[in-house]
Length: 281
Ligand SMILES: [Zn+2]
Image 1: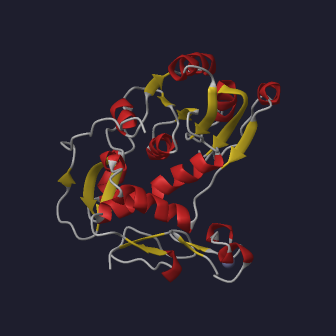
Image 2: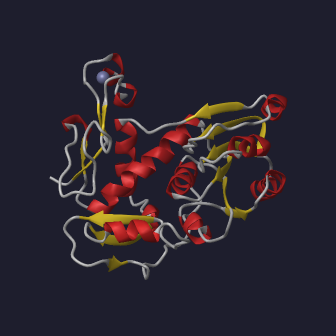
Image 3: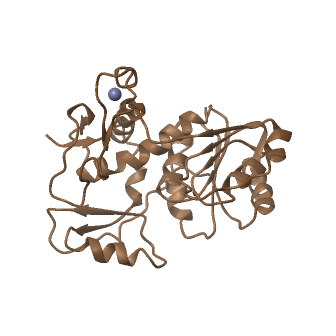
């Protein structure tokens, strides 16, 4: 059976697991850590309860897109995005793009994605962004975001994970709005509390997803919302994976590189057409 699987195994017995939230399980095992060996192999051990079958219309590539999509979905849900909302996504990596995708599917009327360069603009628009902003400082982004969204953002989704991004998000959110941090920042960060306090903004954090969110991503792809396929820019064999990692050190057009243990030579997908922007829901 073709499946996709959550990359952790809950105990199945604790309060969190029984509530369908194995990611909160205090004794969960994480794939790709010292708990369980991860991918980049022909086979990997996953939890039986973490396996979700792929519908016939979906490929294994689609199955691999479910995980980053689920990260974006969880963030959009944490942000309480409502129909008609103005949403700003900071960062145009796979998680930012997934957040833009789900914000549009949640009914956001306008979704702006920001990044330092316009390199990801076509992808962001394919994923549902109604505007793309290449801005380098907080004040410029806040002004450009307000113009693109027709007002200050109801929800800001921070998908970069570098220092200064929480301050940037707080600078862009509307009074009474919500900031959700999805970016994984590994360094101490500072922000001016007054910026958030003056707006009485909510600041929330978002990590991973639950089983239901994984299933929701499968269902969305199966329902024909297949724009995330545009994120797949290359497929490499296991043997070519180290070289593919090296190539990512420099500026690249790659977004999601698939590693397949069953392929021979690299199958270059750079000629893959980017689909038309998603219609307004
Ligand atoms: Zn548990």
